[in-house]
Image 1: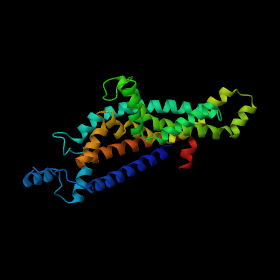
Image 2: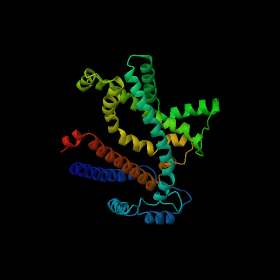
Image 3: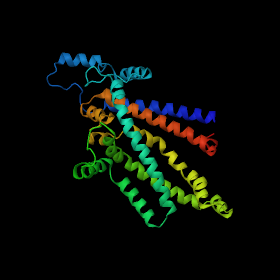
Length: 306
């Protein structure tokens, strides 16, 4: 098991290095100039370029950035006065994480339950309803879902607030919009996995031994069918917890999405790079945790990777 974990950690480190390198050079290729204010004098612009290191060769800039990154420094924002990228992430990530946790709990809970109910009622009305929900969830973009929820539950029926993030009632609509796609994906995966397991020999053996249907479903079907869900849990957790940029913009949530969108329009290279790297690190960490957990749950995984 130790060798398996070491391999996964080394793979994560290599992946992170490649990610930072690729993103650094791609960000430098983005059209635009962070210091394109027509009121700015050439001298001021030259001083700013020197301050942020843009007057140095690209390779030297890369070396400086990697050195600072190893010390946990994502750099300074070029548009937000007296703010580092670390400050922006620390200020905005709690909102994105809070929204993401609510959405994740909602998506996993309802998704797994819907998938189980659909599989146990295959060909019946309940199965049809669950499949329709899954199709709608995977077909409609989250920003369309968010706008629809705002219109019906906020504007037309007046049941919930349509924007801001000031209390529990403010989190319901954005969390639902953010969770719907994941909920639909999990339910589809859980349903197909449950139906596949029904035909396995150990299920037939359990039935032949006279075990009750509830015991077979809980101890054998659900326990084994949930394994494929674990495989998508890493990227799912990372993407949901870091928040969806468009959903946060629609509901005026002061999360990472707001700063990321503004940094792209302002050509704020430091914030674009820092947030992209932070998101990538978070994604890699989540995948690493899921890989290790998957190896602990299913010994066949670590045996096959030796």
